[in-house]
Amino acid sequence: MTDTASQFAFVAHIPVRWSDADAFGHINHARMVTLMEEARIQWLLSAGEEYAPLIKSAMIVHVEIRYQAQLRHHDSPLSIGMWIKGHRSVDFTIGYEIRGAEAALDSRPACVASTQMAVVDIEAHTLRRLTDVEKGYLTSWGRPEA
Image (cartoon, rainbow, N blue to C red):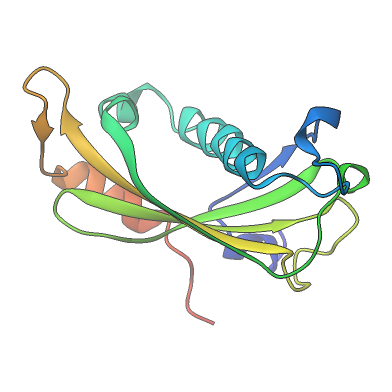
């Protein structure tokens, strides 16, 4: 792992489909959320069975996206670097930096985003607290301070 790549807990390479572009050739906003979801699922599934309770109980409560440059179909596959920005007792936030296929990981991202994920007790339909094991796992996926 390079020093640049180590700033991310996980980097997914997500192909852009022709249908992801709008009439102007840019990746459509709603499709960007879907591409982020594909990357997030790839990352969370890589965690293994030990963390299945966290993965299966996490639901999105807030999404924030800031576009800094255009992304188009020919930028495929997108390089989506992710890390845990922080966690509290019942939620955690995933940070994203999204770049086109040709962009270096240390270049300015075309898009920066975050998703706040709450954890729920699926049976009771209520929020639940993160366990100490889950908090440790989330902390290990944090981004080193520059």
